[in-house]
Amino acid sequence: MREDLIASLRKMIVTDLFIEVAENDIGLDDGLRTVVGLDSVGFVDLRALCEQRFNVEISDDDYTPENFTSIRVLADLIDHLQAKKAAADSAR
Image (cartoon, rainbow, N blue to C red):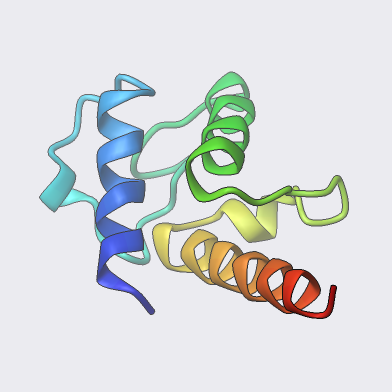
């Protein structure tokens, strides 16, 4: 897992979603709803921010509570989507 991706996700959650937790206090496996405190609107915003910042499309099938449980799980999803996009782009 890429440290730059994890750092970007932490910063985005604190800065863009106005979560009052220090970036370094968000653990890889902390629940984004239960520990960090994201609500339903926060998750919609997080999806849009991830799509813009990481140049991926999070489909409705991928936009599930399971894929947004923690920084680790979300980073894995983004890594997967970026690799899939890169493979599709190189096949052209």
